Length: 157
Image 1 (cartoon, helix red, strand yellow):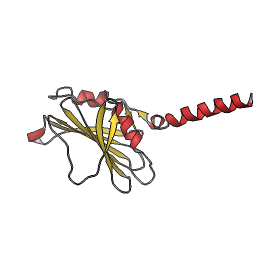
Image 2 (tube, helix red, strand yellow; image 1 turned 90 degrees about the vertical axis):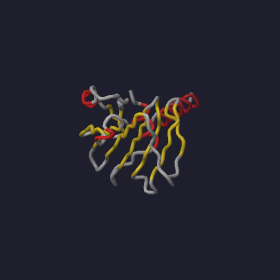
Image 3 (cartoon, helix red, strand yellow; image 1 turned 135 degrees about the horizontal axis):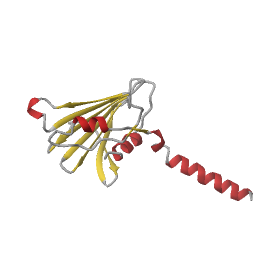
Image 4 (cartoon, one colour; image 1 turned 45 degrees about the vertical axis):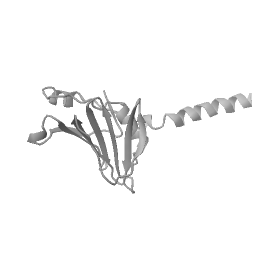
């Protein structure tokens, strides 16, 4: 009986640990942002979950010469946490001299990087002809990890 109890407890502990990053996400309703981009040349996928509770979100098309190919979406939360989604249709997003780590976003590979403090993280991936970049800027009171950023990318629809 005691062994069965220990086994059941171990299973619950493993389940709790394996789902820990997903539980750090907050639902996000992107309908207002979708409405703002409904007349645009392309409609990128947007997150349905964020690694923090968004207090505001905005959409900005690219500069005049790029307004049909570059979009920026900004998400702000409390405690100086901010997420920028940058999308490029038919283009690429690259940085020179940045060490990256390949991560799996469902069946797509992405490139993850962070600054030495971990307060600036970025994740870049391409789906179809759209390249996505998530840049996370976090304040001293937040501890969002790589797995949270990858889970956010997996929530795109």
